[in-house]
Length: 229
Length: 306
Image 1: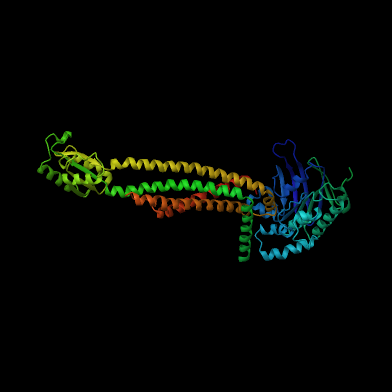
Image 2 (image 1 turned 180 degrees about the vertical axis):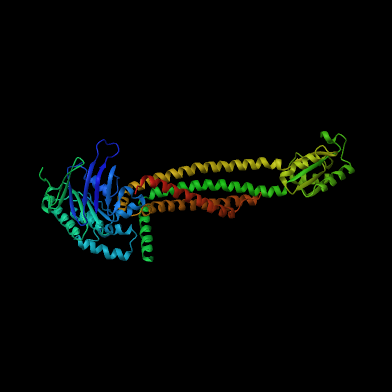
């Protein structure tokens, strides 16, 4: 589903590469934690998958596409295969819960009937049934992140990227959010979650990729946060 | 399929409505600056049409006058005294020979010239002392092609019995030149205003793109196409531009209908009418809309990466 082959990314005006010669493969339906300190390259890894930045060298393959050879006009189609969740939720403050999730379908030109069918179903799945009319500021942080997850998942993407999705949440809520991602993973969606929340990584015992200063220092099935270094 | 299309239209319209409302003061300023630039553009174009209208009208009536010698004329070619009958006949037959360039010949006697002068300046004391004998007799020559007046001038100037040859175009041309100059001035101002509106549209779109970066960011993430992301911005600009152009056209129409319409009743000159306003409207609106779309598109390419 995702394959990095000797990928290096150096940002302009930066002498050190953000990612240095990374090779990895994530299979369809996997759940992978990407761990590492701030600045270790976790976000760069996700941005490369989203085709927000291009690799300086090496090749990135996502959902059967070689991204360095993907023309710009085909990038939107790639992104429709990928859902994304962020630490800061990124909800539209003037739209209610339903509107925020529906927005993802509306901008893709989906019909009103399709939206009316799919959005409640997705809200139900993330545990927000009955809160459709609430505005983002009227619900808790955990609920806001559920809205963001619903929006990322409503289009049934192949891959769901989560960049520190629990960074703003308390431990209990964080665990609920990751359990929700786990449920989504069971529907067949590949999940890549960048985090430095060791409690969660230790509890879920999923595959762990550890980055340190742009290098991949660990790739462990059923790993824990600290690993054995 | 129809469902998809109507959903899209409805969604885009509601987004535009929200955008225009949220950005009301900027939208109004784009509309007003567009109004002023289209107004100047329209004034320039209409002034050009006014010159053309007057030219068509006057050049049809313009004549070359061949003034004949009078008994007491002090023109150098009239030293032999008043024109003789044979000289007059000679000039007449020469003019007949110059058809079809010469369309019509109207002979004007000294008495007719005197009457015309009197009727033109009936309130003026300047010409009170003048007598018919002082007025030159003339042939008024109408040409099929008024630009070829010099053919007549060179044929008759210095001919026996001819005092002077005058082309009325020479009198009208400075007037037309002034009008043309004014219209170019209006067009120059229009160019300046158009530049202003282009810069304002670019700035507005930059600001709007910035204030809506959350929405566009989400649109990008869920895979909306560049066209779908940019369309609301372009349509909002287009609506503001069209409102501004419509206001400008309204002002131009009122100026021509009531301003020039009033002048037309006072002066015996052919003026442009509101029909001329409608003729230039598609060009004015098209230019304003085209420029707005182009500016919006170029700005978005730069400031709204997809």
